[in-house]
Amino acid sequence: MKIEKLWGERFEELPSKEMVDFLSGRDVRGIPPCDERLIPYDLWGNRAHVLMLCEQGILSKKDAKKILRGLREIERLHQKGKFGLDSSKEDVHSNIESDLIERVGIESGGKVHTGRSRNDQIVLDMRLYLRDQVLEFVKGLMDLMEALLKKAEEHRSTIMPGYTHHQHAVATTFGHLLLSFAEALERDAQRLTHWFNLFNKNPLGGAAGYGTTFYLDRQLTSKLLGFDGPTGNVTDPVTQRWEPEAELAYDVAVMMDHLSTMAQTLILFSTGEFNMIRLSDRHCTGSSIMPQKRNPCSLEVIKAKTSFAHGMLVSLLSAGKSLFMGYNRDTQWTKYWIMDLVDESRPALSVMTEVIHLLQVNQTEMLKRTREEFSGATSLMEWMVRHGSLPLRKAKMILERAVKYSEKEGKEEVSFRSLKKALTEMKVHLSVKEKDVERMQRPEKILTQILSVGAPSEKRIRENMKSLEQKVRTHKDWLLHQRKGIEKSKALMFKMEKQLGC
Image (cartoon, rainbow, N blue to C red; front, side):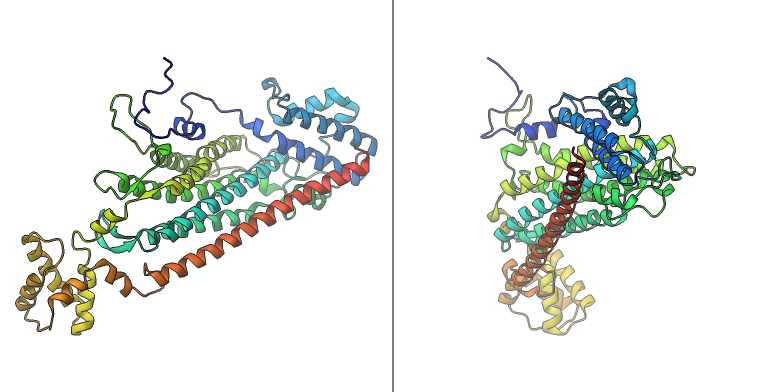
């Protein structure tokens, strides 16, 4: 008998390998060196730089062809998993240049670094890496928003209690709650797209941070690398190497806060005490000793990863606090923090998307809970204000007494008898019928009365959904535009290489 897990027999379906990896973190597997992730970006930057040097007449066509062919060979080996990093060569830049020189000789390969420094090279590599991560985060957010919108459509009329201070407040719908989550995530997408406005600029050409006597065409390398243009100042991106990382980290940390809020809400709703939803077995784990357990571990891990994101953000901000002009070795560590943050955070989007897709909703229990703990008291009070032309403060005082008396009667909604008693004590003459008292506390009735924009009534929920669906389309169009722009830049590079005979 072979045992791989210490639980699972009570489950209909076990978590996928991806989910197990998400849950286990680094417990049984390591993470690759940071510069391994930068190999394709460094190769791309090298190729763009060489083509530009050739166009500027700084590098001969013969040398350019040799170098580009060597770089293409390294790229092919990397794609096959046959090009790794040698730790004795310090970093990805040294590894690639060293390997290139071994392939094509120092007379040609030794010219690849002309007009360049590792200072502008690493800033370039990181901006290319970060840009790809931003696009992946936006894609993940759109997938999650679409899942929320679909589930919200299914449950736009599923009545449930709203909560404040973890206690019953007023009636709402599960669909409206899901839309509130989608609204927050859409702001996350806006923050991430704004990252492009700030940092999709080309730092290559700054050399050590103060330019070079070689006349470099930074506009051309910008086109070849898919940037909106070169940075306006060559010292800034080298000195502030931490800033694009910190900006992305902030955007992700806020996003993770939103996911963590969703996670905590769903965890509580899935408990036996609430019994409002049921998570799929795929997102739960068992206990090594308790046979009955279905633990919401996927959601708990999202909360932990949120704390991790906060820590990485603070580290990145701290790295930028006291830098002298130009390059500082302090900023090398920003690479580790942002890559760890991305690795920990990005899978949370696909996990939460699947959680929402497979979520089961207990509509009966939700409606039952909405009729408990005086959830209709606020609606009744507002009806009294309208019906009896009472000041809101006086109506609230009356209802507070009525709630107190109803509690003593063992009721969970305001009784006609208690309300009459409170009105008499407050010396307020208001014509009230028992059927009105009951009707104005009924959740179905309450939701038809909430008419303001953004409210959980049927009409307003549909408006909210329509607005969010349009925003999703806009973000997806933006995503497609950015990806097409990047592909266009790569196509231009291939075209120029072909013209050289590579």
